[in-house]
Length: 409
Image (cartoon, rainbow, N blue to C red; front, side, top):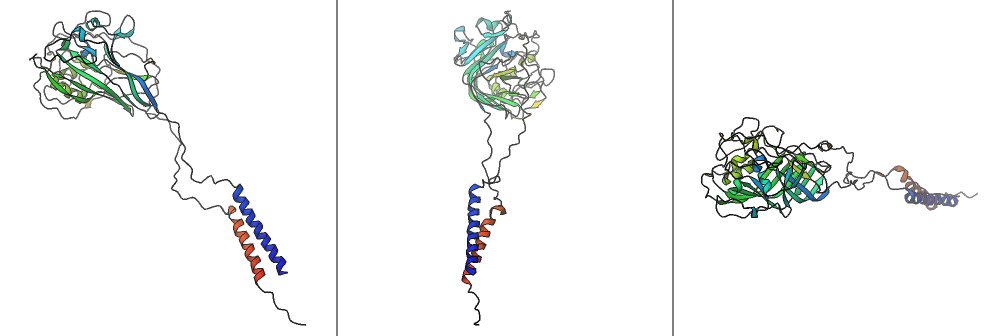
């Protein structure tokens, strides 16, 4: 009787083990086992043909107080004349140099056109340029390269090339090279390399090379990365600066300044007063012009007027003043004639407003940690192993234990 019972138990144990093997083969992996975190599609765009447009300010595009001289823009770097008091000849003026151009607003055509030497002396209607009226020219840097991420609200675009900003037809000038735009959290900063020559209105023979410096040329307090680009007003009104010489006047509608590093660089050049409010009649012309960026040269971006119109809140530059200089600011005194009304380009319809990128879309993606210990295996998958083993042990015991001895009859 023992042997048939042992055989039955052994067979049952083998069946239980077979059930366990089949269960392992057909049961899929647990859903709670660690997996790779979910991935998202990249949102960064690569830019290869971005365009930067900037008119600097009206003071850089108007008639100078020295009769017969003008302030104007040049593509590329004009040669060093070697001494002060020299005017830029027509042969050295360039409309284009590499990826840098100078364009002028044509009021009759309602468009930006290639600048001309003659156009440096007229306003947008073709009338002779007067002190305080604007010739409405812009620096145009093309072929900008970099990255753009609208989802993150960030961008970095760099341009190569140089332009020259000329005052008094060449008595003073500086070079602006290789601007870089960086945008994050709704704000932007444009930096560039400036270099030039120190001059002095009181001593026209003074002409000293000033070392190049990396400076902030524009701070953009509000940037919305639209579909094709954006236009933003650099901070000027309400911005304070520390000066090595002279004093900033902080009253009136147009008081303010360019960034601290910009003004500090201009002091050894003798032209710092062109970039902050000093109380003269030319103060309205110093306001920074709007800056436009197109992400691709083939996309239309609204042209910008020459003079900014927004009034940002007061900002204080805390940078220490630069070393003292004896160069005199080449700005007219307060008693100069009142500036006539600036002739801005006609109003252009603005593009459809874009949603500010500060309001970022919410996301439900949560990475799964791979360091958490896996939970114990469910009991439903382990009972066949234990049950089969128990039955086999019982069968073995039945075979090993000797049967009881029966008495003789």
